[in-house]
Image (cartoon, rainbow, N blue to C red):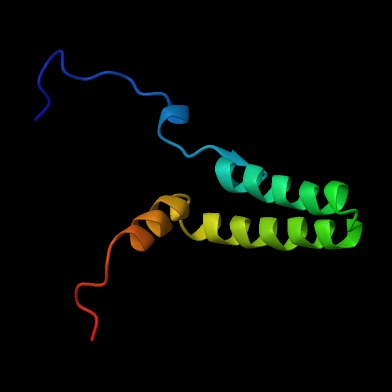
Length: 85
């Protein structure tokens, strides 16, 4: 039962995660920075390209399954295993 005056339209962009090339924004930026550090800083061009390609592919695969996988992973790492054997 909807109460009059308590409904507002919500734009779709406010509810969807921010993705860059299919990967979460923070992961894409961190992955690109690491690849650039390898490629430009250490002059390991092929290693930097490989790190970027593999890292981005893994992030896109994980984002297709769950767009908020980084939040879930961070929460998983932060909590202790209370029920572990």
